[in-house]
Length: 81
Image (cartoon, rainbow, N blue to C red):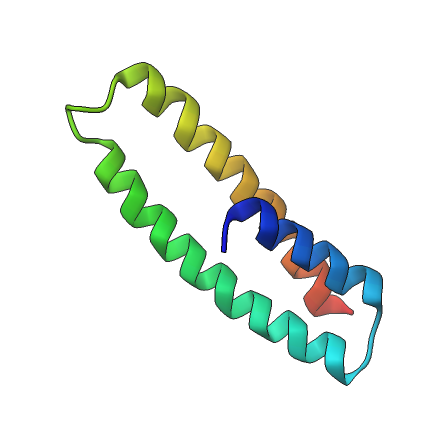
């Protein structure tokens, strides 16, 4: 699942409100987010390859890190619900 989809799914879970199905979906999304973060870390290592232009690295990683922070904030809100 991509970052944009994950972010959208967390927002949908928040919009759905509370209840057993919302808590279950939040748990599923949290698991997917953990997987995504692990993949992001591996991607960051690969991105450091000398074959990748520095300009690309300077754009891609900060953008993905911002998305990760946004998803983490949504996850925190969903877990509070």
